[in-house]
Length: 556
Image 1 (cartoon, rainbow, N blue to C red):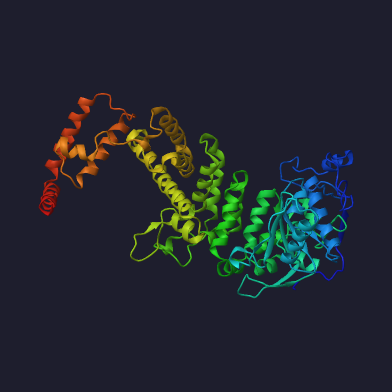
Image 2 (cartoon, one colour):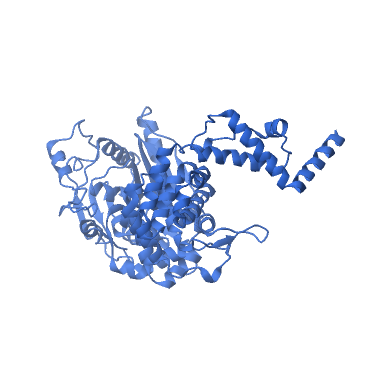
């Protein structure tokens, strides 16, 4: 494999501290010893400067919980029971998070001399033989699925309430045109080298109860707060360009900075081309969703995607739709997104949003570079908002998420250009509230971001006025007089005019900021006048309605 270390042993092998220093066959007491308590204190999970988690000690220690110690004891007892030479290792994110002082109930286990499925069944058989009452699920097998970044079958089982994903150490070789590797059994060095980042390439050896760093950089990068690739970034990204998006996600999630080599490689147009050709758009969507759904760091993720230029690739639509205004698509959308994120940081305190609404807002901002543009899914279909096209076809996000963000972006764009008279009108405001329902506050927030600085207060005032006016919930209001009553009691011809009169009734409710009709006689008199005026102004529609009514009677 390219770039794999030829060393026979890792550069760092650091022993665990109590209680992890106990023999793997010993079960700790129900309470942590004083040494274990002090070991926990050695890991400072949050940097004092607020720059994210850091590994703050020179010689890090993994402190196992009681459950983890018991599970690892089961694994080692399985090996001795079947007289295996297997060296089991906990791998990846669990090791990283434990060193950063974070807990996890999911552990990846890597074995060196058999498949993960084979080893998982041995654990299951061992417990069934020696401890039939022990908590152990059946073994599941996640088949290889390259589109979901699963290049090798993985066995899954739950032991003592901890989820285990069991796999074998492996090496991966990629072809130029595919992100799907040729997979083979590998050494620990090869397995570490093929992983995405050094901080995710650490192992915890269950036989020696020690942390292993076969890249020689993982522990150092945990201390320094750096996202770095085990191999040259260009090689890592050429092998799997999806790792560009993963780099952004881990950087913002952990508060780590990107290595300069990653920044340079991530800005390479050739890598963008590989992202387009080697990675499915579904996988793009998964990574973007993971970034933006996490509210505390979602804006950081947007800014980083914009600054690296990756936003220009993410806002394409693929082969399933086409931009109507191809020449109008901005080549550099990063500054547009960055400006909106900067504005949102300034104004979001004026617009309290739920986490779910904030996620919808970030999706709308992600596509802000294509506001005002349209995509066409099929020649026979009318064009759609480009925001919808990017999210649904470009990122393959669920239709509901694409529809929601698209509606927010369209209304916000309209509101940002609204006159003061329109913003003061309860009918105008009520219409967009009825269209977006609870998300009307999201559109107002985005509209404030889109508007010039001198006009932003208008949207704060609009929100406050709407909240106090009684319009909240107006999306549930219905016309007091329904269609049947309009025809029977007011002489309104059935057909196209009914919807007009139903809307006029709702507009009257909105103008009064109340769904309650205070003077029913006055309302009915007003409605009769509206019906008479519509009938007088639309003789052709009335004739069509009467003709249709006669035809229905004749048919009966």
